[in-house]
Image (cartoon, rainbow, N blue to C red; front, top):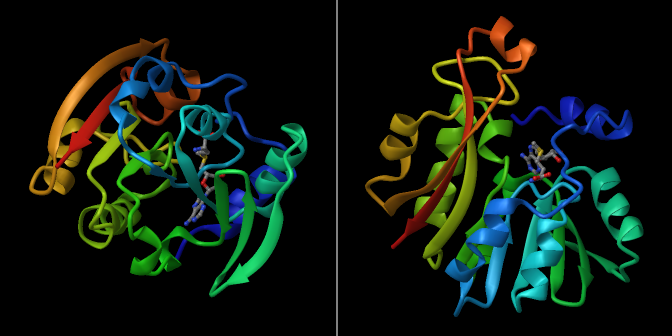
Length: 214
Ligand SMILES: C[S@@+](CC[C@H](N)C(=O)[O-])C[C@H]1O[C@@H](n2cnc3c(N)ncnc32)[C@H](O)[C@@H]1O
């Protein structure tokens, strides 16, 4: 069961240190990996500006986020016009080449993923605990059958169990996705180790940008 209260409180109290005020540098650097794709999934999208960048590059964006606050902020801060409708378990906010599904990612039906061939994932896996990451990998590998390409900058601080942010180590990525996708490490960036992570047992902090294809 996802931790709704945790994330809702983060958004309500504006404790959103994960939000970036600029487009992620790996997305800018590797945007060409989405060439030829029309529909891109942005799971756990928050109010990320990366969605607008993907749209500027000709993609129709399908965001998924369960915080209404995040979606309303996204619309207001970017002066977007979006309509609202109910689809199954979700409220869907739709604008020009962008649909944001408000609700729990794990409740998406398999029909949602039809014709979505690309995925850009920044900071979804780090929001999930180990059991949720297994479920998430199952969705991407076996439910999203049209999905061919995934670009994901993934946080890693070694074998640290607590979070969020949860650490996702290379071996876990290979174990969960290796049988379904060809996995390529595009870039590794190191960061100064934050005290809070040191206290949780981390010895280093890095972000690896992965490219999955099949
Ligand atoms: C670490 S933030 C990342 C946000 C965004 N990708 C970014 O780069 O700024 C994780 C987001 O996922 C949302 N979230 C967590 N679990 C979710 C779930 N099961 N379904 C939909 N959204 C979820 C949270 O509300 C939060 O906005």
